[in-house]
Image 1 (cartoon, rainbow, N blue to C red):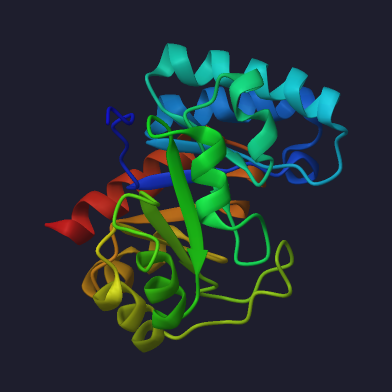
Image 2 (cartoon, rainbow, N blue to C red):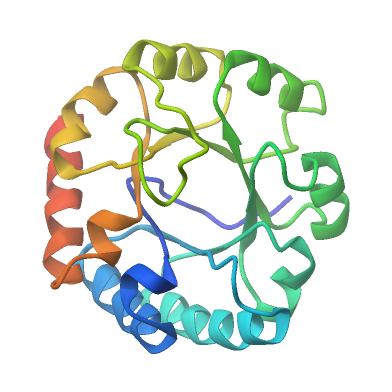
Length: 216
């Protein structure tokens, strides 16, 4: 098994509308990686598969030149075509065992989890089924209104149940770094904090510095 190395410290999840359009997604990712983003997830629920692949490949080029792995949201069947390093699935997306069967052993799978029961369900498929968990929402957000807010205690419960590294998502900003590090998370996953920023590079740098300080 030779899955890509990855670092959840500052994990950017793209939002095409918040970035300002497809071309701006590419530029946002470029600047964010320059600022210190350690992992990128390409997410867009509105593009057709062909459009998704075309934009995903452009994002992949930036990630490869920046030395940062690229994860695809949900569309397991397009990972190979884009040349991405893995996929992220939610509780209502394709089951992780099916995703693993399609991707094989050499790509990453991230799973959204909100409860220790979600962790146990994944673990029942084997330790190698997924590579990391995304837990949230820390704060209510417009991008995922269906994801209810979890308190830090609930996030800690998931972290404690998980054999995998955990990043927290949902309205996360640099000011959350101390709290999130304290409950044992391995990184900050952000959408708006970078995609809505007029200066994605400095926003990424601020998040990276906050995380570094929190972990010290």
